[in-house]
Length: 243
Image (cartoon, rainbow, N blue to C red; front, side, top):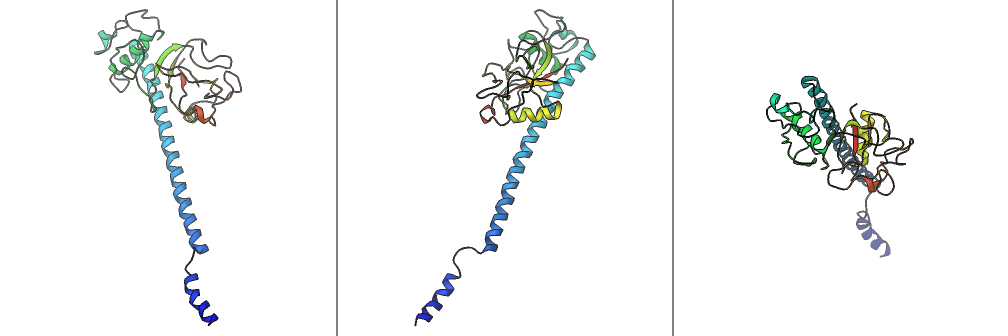
């Protein structure tokens, strides 16, 4: 009788749990799904970086082409409307060869778009750069063209020698800026043609270092983009130097 009871239990016991082969198959499927998700996310991030590069380089090309055609700096020309339908004339401190006021920064995008060098319709209205009169990056930060020193060097993050530059706008992940710098320049936020910038338009300015900071060591020669700083992921910005 005891043996018969054991025989009755055998069919039920054989169906409990997973076999090693079944578990291996499940793990392989999970690995493939996770790998696909991670690869897909990497592709999305790479597409955003490439899109940002295209935006910045497009503004750079437009800036240079405008000067080549009209022999004026966009935003700085007080007679722009006579040559470009839809352009708004500069009205203060004009024809200096520099986009050195807030109004000129707004007018620069108006001149470039009215001349057909930049996609979009920018009215030139407003005292400062906003989402209504300037391009906006993929994360919602307002972009800018300016002649100023609001970019990082190995000694300071602002007040540097004024140069024409394109601001990416803030609200950007530091990992994206590091990737952009890798593709465009030298991976350093304080040297080369692409730098960290704390500029923002009416919102929280990016922090250069420390809690929520975008670089590893601030305004120092050995400073790097702090891609491991998760608290800085949502609010960093950069500047592409034009001259």
